[in-house]
Length: 459
Image (cartoon, rainbow, N blue to C red; front, side):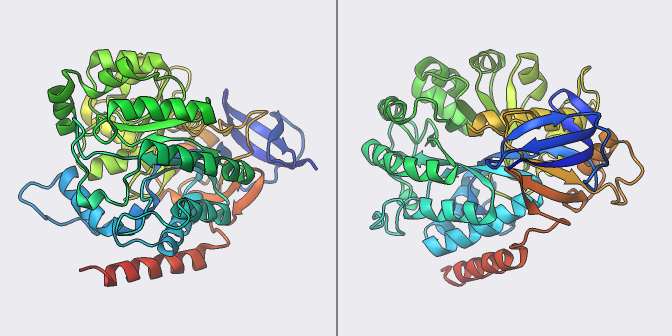
């Protein structure tokens, strides 16, 4: 059965259009997108494409705000990671599902319509596998299905604690898998993901955590399961990582990866913060997506990605909320743009001649890159793509009386961001109405209870 809405304005891949009719089939796939229709509109405000969240560690939402104190003389990503490991060791499957459900409901209310879950807590607290080796992956899948958010599940291969195959630390014991174990996990998850409408991919955690032989073998095994599956990897996030990689191999991380792995449009280079000019050029030419997580990168003191250099090289990018210190699609765009303004001392850095409104230009770019990284047809309001979209509240005080491009600009740069969202649709189904998800209260209560229990169990 065909369903439809009529939007007063909609941000299509070609830009803003008026009086747009969106139609989709019972699979939630857009079958007709027609601007300039004569019929009366049915939405409360303009429609924008739903933003894919291309990088998520769901369990970390429960520690957001809890590491904002000086733990060492010089705090950094590495000291934060030590605190995060302690928390991860106490997590059980029910708590993970409750945290993920609360997070995914939050994401939907904040304009994210799908999520790439970079899933690396695999085993029991003592490091032994669960009786069902995929138990924690199943918890994430159930949470996504209950919330109604699109899912790309990325089980993480994690084997070593540093370059040169350093043995894993005790704090990493829940993450560690052999290559053979990972491939068995993927084989078991593939039909389950297909049945749920989710996409299964793979995440070699990082070059420091996956030795070259294991990287080669797991990619070959993945190709035998699904040669089109997405591949995500943390890379060049911190300067120490770059320095350690140079010491180990004589090359910077992105350069090493491009020389030793078949990097192409299937790949998402998460962070890629510290690249030299040649790495920017080569990585962009590979077709890989740069997975930018501006609020987490700011929170951890990672550094600033050079967006002008990436765009000049023709690079594709998207955004993720990573550690979930912030869960808001528009907030990530704001932080990304503001970081570029601080670095370049210029304004409206991410706009261009074809799309001078920076919020519109960034939204279209983030949707394109996020869809590519997710391996799903969620690339915007176009025929053949999934009917994932957000409707802004044209009566919100920050938006009222403005033209549609200025409404989106005000949503990103001049509102409380989430407050200006009226509705969110995923695969043609309304998941958020009047700014609220139907599970808002129960999912929030479950999240709070799980976090309280984890904190009580803290030594």
